[in-house]
Each structure stands twice: as structure tokens, then as C-alpha cells.
Length: 314
Image 1: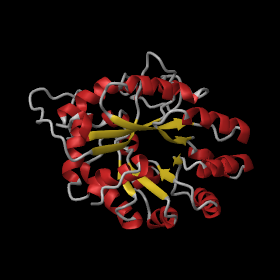
Image 2: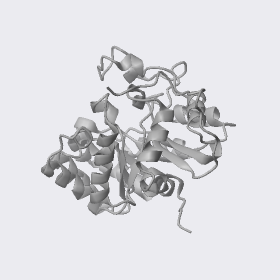
Image 3: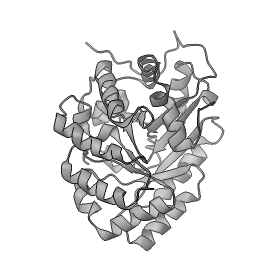
Image 4: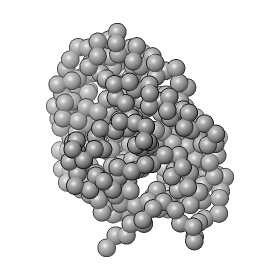
């Protein structure tokens, strides 16, 4: 039976703090429940996970700092990308303002993906994103497409807004089912028209690619997006479809993604604190460091390049 630690701290066997190499987590969320809205975390709001209460708890820099210390990482040897978490979807800049103030003095370098509304008129959308761009930490935005992907991507104003993001050199975090041929077709049409667009596919491209149910056809559909050199993919989100996922599942999923995308465009990410359904953050850092010790690009280097625009080449 798989084990799960009750929290992120391990005071009895904390590893010595190390300075190198830099570890990067390109996908985690803070939940400041006493300040943000987080409607989706409420029991009466979708998704209706029966165990939602286990993750609907505070997770901020305090918990993160304790976890990385327990994993033996100094703040200077760790970086992360904060992905919008529903703090205030009507005013996305509120989340970034909170995040910027919250991270001051922590000694941890980070970047941020803000919330955006692709359904706004181009004028309103540009204003919304421009407010986010006031913050140096912001490198991109996300509007979760999910089951609305085809419908939204066919809308002229959505296409115009995505095109503007490409012109601004902002990352678009794409979260939808990339085993769906219709979805991938719509994405491909846009990316063919705007090859400079920088997109990052979230959560391995969909649940089927993490839970072992993907067919050869599913993988072939996802692989169509690998034809676009400015599109990257994050391997993450196993806990959303399998609360007891195994490390072997993670390894096989990552290796298959690398076979398709190459080891320079796949990034391993935690999706914390949803990760805590399965394991604490310190355990995650330890497990992934061991599992992918021979794949530094997937473990951190690619994320440094994509989100921090840093190269690890000598």
C-alpha cells in the first residue's frame, strides 16, 4: 500500500541544506484562503471531489519553505512558477499583487502565470493582461479551456487575444484534453498561423496520458502538437485521476512524453498542493530527484529556459 506523509515537514531526518543544483518546479499553486476567493475549492462548487477538503487548506510560502528545507534545498537553490489558482478571476491582478507582496523577503526566485479571460473583447483583454504585465514576475497567462476548447478556439476574438499574447511574447498555459482530435486540430490551426506563439501544455495533455488509459491513437493525436517547436509540455497532475499513483506511472508517462517531444521540451511539475492527495511536497522533491537524476533537463533545466529565460549550457 502506498504511503502518504501527514505533512511536508520531516524534522527527524531533514537532509542537510545544499546550494546546488537549482531545482525548478514549473507548476504549483498557493492557496491563501483567508484572502482570496477560490470558488472552486468550496464544497458546493465544481469540481465535486468528495475529498476536496483535504486540499482546501492554506498553502503559501511558509508551507513551501518548510517543505524545501525538509528536502535539503536552500531558498537560493529552488525556484518555482506560480500558476493562477482562482484568487480573484474577475480581477486577476489582485492575485499577482498578493503574490508579489507575499514573496517579498523569502529569498526564493519565482515567476507567475496570471489568470486571463479569453472571452473578453480584444480591447478589454489587452487591458486585463497589461495590468498583469506591470509585475516583473508575470511571464504568461492561463484560461482553463477544458471541455470548451473547440468552441472557444473557434471564436475570432479568442484567436485575436491569443495572437496578441504571441506578439507580446507571453506564454499561454493550455489546459484541455489533447487526446481529442477536434481540440488538437483547432490548436494546430492557430499555431500554424502564429508559429511564434509560446504555449505550454498542462498536466501531460490530459488524464489519459497519466492514468495509463491512453491508446496509440491518443498518443498520436497529442504528438501533433510536438510539431510546433515553441510548444512545451508539463508532466504533472497524476493525482487528479489517481490519488494513489505510483512512481512507475510517473516514470512511464514522462519517458513516453520525452520520446514524443524530446528531452528539451518536457518539464516535470508538482501541481502542489493538489499533489498532497498523494504525498507531501518534500517527499515529491526527493522522489523526483532520485527518479530523474539522469534527466536534468526534464527535472529543472527546461523550466529554467522556458520561464526564467536562462540557459544551463556551459
